[in-house]
Image (tube, rainbow, N blue to C red; front, side, top):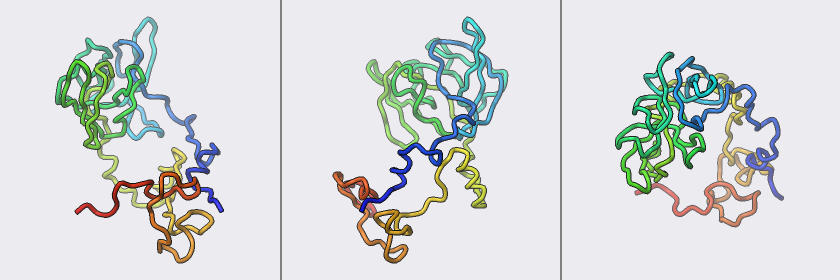
Length: 236
């Protein structure tokens, strides 16, 4: 008999797993056109791990937009967006205009999408090589990825780098932190569940009854654990 796994219950879209976006300050993305503005305020948003800065742009009419606060940026600083902008913390430039070795964040996967990668607090990527066709960037995972030269990115490291170093100390503090984004907490391993809740559950607790490898064509109620892994075990 099939089992209602967490990823299946999440797909129903119930309030248990829906992100409470109405509590968040707003979306963080690069402006669609070249602009120049001033940092009005530094704000906290429960939907983002990093502190945000509220930038007031003057383009035809005054408008405000959220951006990730870079280290060293303060209220009153000028922020520029476009290929003519200076290579300075908080400014947004195309990758083809950013020198090699520069630290960047909030990188666009496709030109104009507003930024998709390197958006958590304290994270940064580095431009390591440039050519006419693409730009090679070293991501925080130590993986190198090629981007279009027209993709934009913010200069500098995202603020809030010490977030992961501070311990929660109490389970209640961790629960409230997860509750802000409607994340499921606490996480329970499959072998500790009952047989009706997970394929690894049942029999004696914390004793695996099945291997953690799962074939690629397994049914949804059984496709858990390592999905068609290339290798398992410790690297020696």
